Image 1 (cartoon, one colour):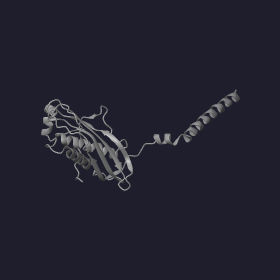
Image 2 (cartoon, rainbow, N blue to C red):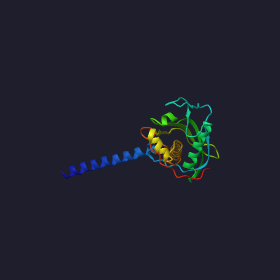
Image 3 (cartoon, one colour):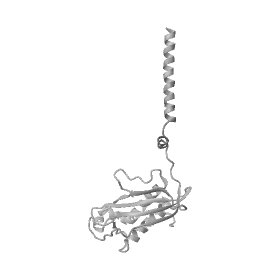
Image 4 (cartoon, one colour):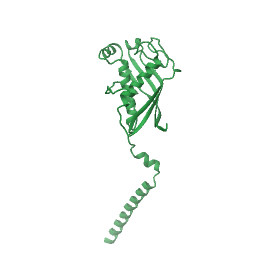
Length: 219
């Protein structure tokens, strides 16, 4: 009886060692890609060395005051003028606000190419409100070699646009379209430069509230 029990125990022990060996073998024989995928990626460590904002003049500007005018660029947050330059200046300010105080290990250059900047018209802003639809491509490069460090990445950074009395109340507190959009883009740019995931839009795809960024000295 003892001999049978001893044999059974040896068989169980042998099976256990065999299982351990198979797990160890499986781990050692796993493809490098699989092991790499399971390892957490470190967060980027960047410092802003420069930037280039491109607002192509091939994009169509609309000054039509309707609820949803056509066009790639719709902007009323500045006095009537060169909308390409005005939108470009918003991105430049957002970069300064979101990235110029970063002191990472690697200096990088940010390149931004605008695809769409569709803010609210007067008619929409002072009635129903809507969505500031903003799309651009962001690329991060090594300033010495020009090699791409991250991207190019297409970013859709939509933001809720206030309407009616809410817009008026916000404007009275200094929360203009320009202020909210600039701070929102600053956050998007900072996330692209500091987070492993980069900017991640909310589940519904539209940011509702804006957390003010601490102003820094403009470049």
